[in-house]
Length: 130
Image (tube, rainbow, N blue to C red; front, side, top):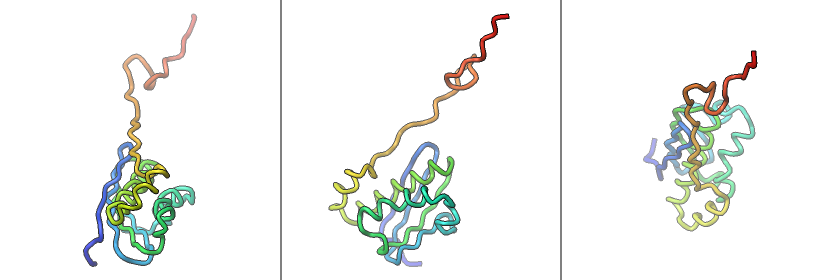
């Protein structure tokens, strides 16, 4: 396999996506599996490929990514951020377009920790009068 054109990292919640873009035909390989196999939900596939569509680079690059941690939502959003960052590295003129679309914003929200005396982070135990 040839050397990657560019590498970038995307993160969301507990998920980390290491993205490599190659010159190619638009294939997306995630952890050695095809995009359709890794993300069966169409909504997540569209969300992942959105930066390529906005940058009009859909058939120009092959995307190879290593994803780990978190769940499907965190991984898809981490991959989306990684692809957007890689595209900006290739063509800095795309930065304003991708930034306007919100693709370069790192969503820093995390799961709130559970507090003692509570059932979840904020959910209190049910009150019993008697």
